[in-house]
Image: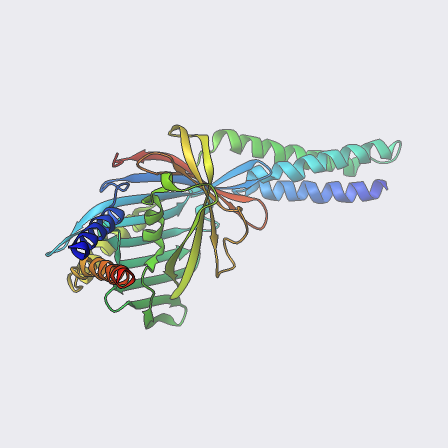
Amino acid sequence: MKRTFLALTLFVSSFIVGQNTSIGTNEKLTFSASYNMSGLLTEIAQVTMETSEVKTSSSTLLRLKCSAATYSSFDSYFKIRDLYESYVSPTSLTPFLYKRDINEGTYNKFEQYKFNHKSRNVESIMRKKKKSGDLEYKNNVKIGYNTRDLVSTIYHIRNLDIHKAKPGDSQNFTFLFDNEELILNVKYISKETISTNIGKKECYKLAISLKNDNSLKGNNDNILWLTADANKIPVYAKFKIAVGTGELKIKSATGLKN
Amino acid sequence: MKRLFIILGFISAVLAVILSVTPFSKIAYIPGIAAFVFGLIAFYLAKQSSKKPIQLIFLLTIISLSLTTYKAIFNKAELGNTQTLELKEKESEEKAIEELEGLDLDEFEGVEDIQFDDQTQKELETQN
């Protein structure tokens, strides 16, 4: 009886934790990526984060799509047309398929990960465009239990119960990028009210850093502001780069879940 | 001393002009203002000698700052042609559906069950 009760309690609690409470099925967030040098802001690209439902013959999935495109003034210098997609479970945000198609200047790359969570294995395909012709690499990558892809990790962070966290609390997330498992550390700093294009918002201030990589290093250098409401929209992000800072500011948010 | 400020002013002014024609035109304010300051110092130090190089520094500075200010006021950040990206998004979704048809999508429910079972097993072991 005791065992059954314990098992039932654990089952119910694990189900509640796995629920998607923040991400809507037709959500569209538009951002402007800019470069800030001594307060002189230069808008470089538009970044969109969109969700939509995708139906297969047997199930319905959530498509998480992130795209980046440079503004017309930059197109003749360095044109970026990047597309990142993740097809996830609408309830637990567990990824099944991840695609990355980047087109940056003359650099082109395509990546695809097919997740097999039972065997903790990812079938990876990587294609690179070269002058001599397209190169294709196929790999099988062993992954850890909670390894996701980059896009679903971002959405997963939004789905966390941050209101339960205390300032200074941190959590690690493992994601697969370029066939390597990277560890993203997210630290809750404090609550802060900032004014954005969608109004004045009370936000959770989170510090982001990569543990085993050279990019996104440093202590509290890369900050993300998520609205302190049920939607937890990323409204502002600041990243330290060699000279100056990179910024991501929200322009519009539609189709929110709550 | 005067020559040093003329050289510094000239370098800053040329840099300001170059930056002002690029999309990073706002950054041109930094070398533009620096060139103006260097020019003023050189002008003060020049006294009776030739001021033609200093005039050139001021001319370049005025051109760069005017162009930067014009671009800052009238140029708005607009997206260029994204048709290929939109087309790529559609094609990618269609291909993804085909790929997903081949996957055992019920397995994720299984993953959660496995997680739950593992946790429960550990809890039960500690309980016993």
